[in-house]
Image (cartoon, rainbow, N blue to C red; front, side, top):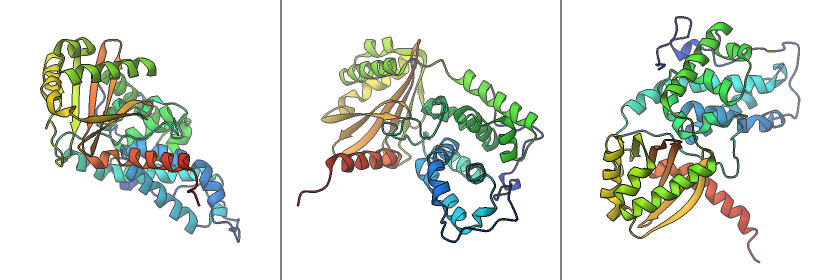
Length: 331
């Protein structure tokens, strides 16, 4: 399995990457009335997609994209030969710098840290050509990679960037980029089973909720893979299991034990997060999120998002959807 150890040719400190990427065209002048929006707006979803996969946080990804936009507005944009490449490079390098401190924060996080889920019902790909790198199970594995490895994997696997362009972005040799991507792929392949279809994943989640609500031990064990793991992210603010619970019997026992209070008086709302079915659960006015990752062997991972801030991106998306469908207010 791959680790976060970088190769000898990989930058070991994010500050070695300059934040202002080439190439520039020195003989051009900025347009008098161009604020840069015409070039920025079409690639904004992709910039957010890169940042989100790099950081596992929609809030931090939004901050990065806003930073890139402010830099783009304030510079002489007519000197940039390829605006989409320039903006993607700036985004990636800022993410690498931020990921260094983010990794340290996650290590001191109280309890289990999970990526922040995003609502993909209105934007199924968040700017990606390939959806695999968006799944929460993959984002959890990517957290174990170095920021540079993660950037190489995301740019190649999620957005199909050529190796030569990734090398330019990361200021590395192309051969070293290929090594980074290969190592990251192996890490992902070793860390998870092949996923089932979206319909099968939904069926597994529905069956899990039905068995969990009843505290049905036998039913739960029948759904689980042998190496199933239950992750609970409460961030020290909400009651949650302090460490992941693993193993078919232990996870079934845990789920059955919390069934009496977890599901009492709840309302369920089905949503799509990170390209897969998930459920928003409202209990006593407090929401939490739940989703799974499943393979042909059964449910491999159960992810509980108990800290309210982890649902912020979904809540905002739901509110926008509600506002759009409500239409203008009556006079």
